[in-house]
Amino acid sequence: MIRSRRLRIAVVGLLFLSLIWLIPQPSAVNQGNLYHHPGDRESDHVVAPAVVRRAQLPAVVVPGGQGRIEPDPAPEQPVNVIEVDKVVPVETDHRQGQGNGDHVADTEPAKPDSGHVFFANRAPGSHSSEQPKALKPAARPSANISTVGEMYQTIERPFNILTSCDMATMIGVPTLLLSIYQRSSRPQDLAFFVAVDTESALGRLRRWLSAALPSDINLHTFVRVMPANLLPKRKPGGSRPELEAEPNFARFFFAEIFPEATGRAFYIDSDCLVLGDVMELQTLSLKENEVMAVKETCETYRLQDFINVNHTAVKPLGIDPDHCAFNAGVFLWDVAKWKHFNITAEVLKWISLNAASNNAIYGRRKGGGVTQPALMLALQGKHGHLPPIWHVNSMGGGQAAYGRQDKDALASPKLMHWSGARKPWLRKTPDNISGIKVQAWRDKCVPEPPVVVSSTATSLAMTALPARWLAGLFVPLTDAELPTTFLEQVRSLQEQSPLVALNCVFD
Image 1: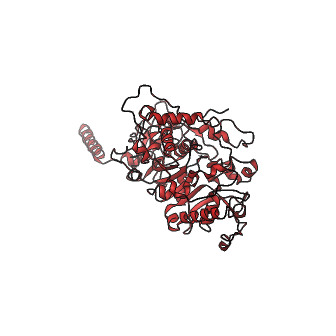
Image 2 (image 1 turned 120 degrees about the horizontal axis):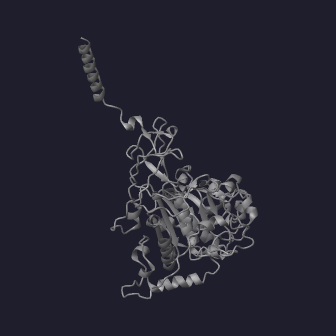
Image 3 (image 1 turned 90 degrees about the vertical axis):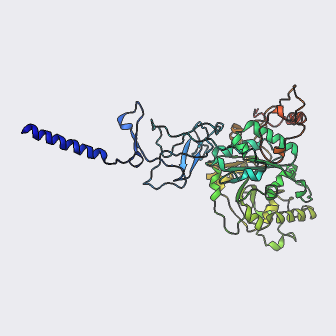
């Protein structure tokens, strides 16, 4: 009897266990996985939240090897692992950023065909024995892409970066582009546009960028020669003749030089270094009638320091002589608004009027200036404010002008501008360069590769610059594939620049 009762109890127990086994259990995605790393203490175990796919939340990658979600998930949706379809990973040595508290990628960005895993909201030092899927390689352009417009269309959410240079200021461009790329939260969406004054300058810059920077930067860098017929006649004057160089006027003509660029653009002089994430500026508020955002220089200059407000051509504008001036070396602008208000035509008008007046409208006053006064006149009432932290200038001038700027910006600059005659790339530091963080630029300096002219050139050697370069596009070439006459010209130019540290070696 007892044996029979025990048998019935055993049968009922087996049936109950079978029912439990048949009931579906919560998946790991719903309940979380226990991440355990060999050697961890029991108290170090971390419950991982759900895996998030790109279809659920768009993801971007920030320097420092950590992922970030945009938009941020709600608190009840913790995120641990992000799988991204297309990113440009960036290697980093995790050194602390200069002033802004960000981690900085100071080494060369990793090639896009290497697998990297990025984590969001992971506690430092946490481990996992379960490895997420490695990132897919960044897409490569099709061989059929033959125009800047076609390449530009491959960028998902482009943010345009504009700059210009001639032979004398070219050394600043590779360093500037790399500093922007390394700090960007979406480096794959950057579009770099560079205007130069000659085909020789185009070839030299392309060779420099191709040899010194990662291909991901080169693919999204478009270089074109500025047409010579864009500028009206002007009457040179002032104490700094280098400001009369044509590329210094390119900022007014980017819509004509690069009609492919749409949306917002950030113009930066080549003597700048970026220490912040430029993507912050893509959503900076501009009012309906504001074409651009600039940093006003109230602490050093007023409009009357640049413009003769009593001139007969200027007086009808009713300019307040004590209104703050601004520095035109860095500005955020809306391309569509620039075209709508026809700012280029306004700038050209003032350049012509000033030349006709023998520089009586601007150029002879305390502030001097060549391009800045014309833009100030053209933009009356049509500019907003760029945060001071995004333009710390006067770093190539005197200590007094530099020191009068916003204190918070000086403490944690996101963009440093060596405006003035004393550039950070000079081989020997002048006694009066002010010593204003010049080492920050030198630490990032990108050297120009020495010229190697092959002695075994074949009949297949090129006799002209590659067509894709002249079209504004990138194609990787070694010195052995470039015209010998071009290389000899570059070597000659290098030898003629003893004051500039083209090899980034400073005295």
